Length: 246
Image (cartoon, rainbow, N blue to C red; front, side, top):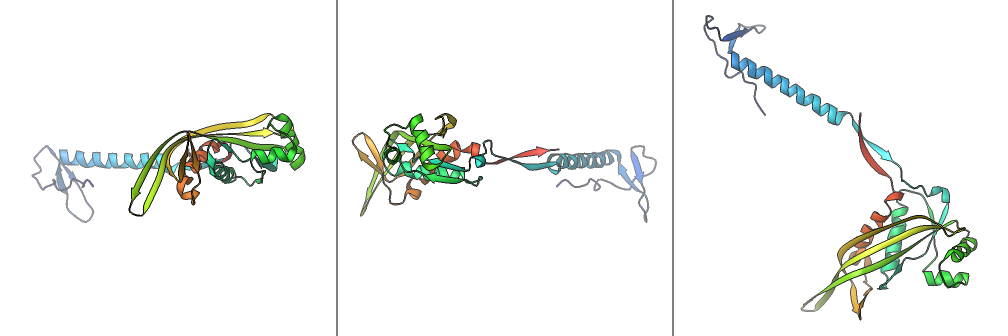
């Protein structure tokens, strides 16, 4: 911290024209050089200016709550079909669960998990998930809206590590998640979004030209990938905060 420049003050003869005298209560006048007096006044001015700037920048600012861009609560109950995936294993199911957690993080929703696409189509007696199928889903399960999605793994670069008594297999995965909210009465898309991420995940098995995700601990193996994709794609359903200054 810069000290107040009183140390340069000294008692000097009155006849010197380059000095000024400041009187202090309870004591005799003390003479300081003109340059020291100017330095002290400059220090006071700039210190006060910095305090004013700090008050303006921080004293008048606050965090403001911003509600979700899309409010799902009026829809009461929402169905979800397990996300399709071009990989074998439980990755599609795992990402679907993370998606549900993301959309219900800031909104109190009731979600009906309908199962995978094959199970849903068999239940309504149809073979294709189109407008007729969505209408049948709405009538059978009393739903007005349904979430669907697909998870595509476009690239996977495997890497292996071997040692005494162990072997591990990982892959650098480039994954893309696409989701949409469909109105069951018309089959119209009310909302859609997509997200892409690339991460190294464990619990991957190679088969032919494809990959299988069957980790014993999916959360540890590819939890970060699933959370990242779902948080990016569901930002419309979560609240945010922004700084507002008066």
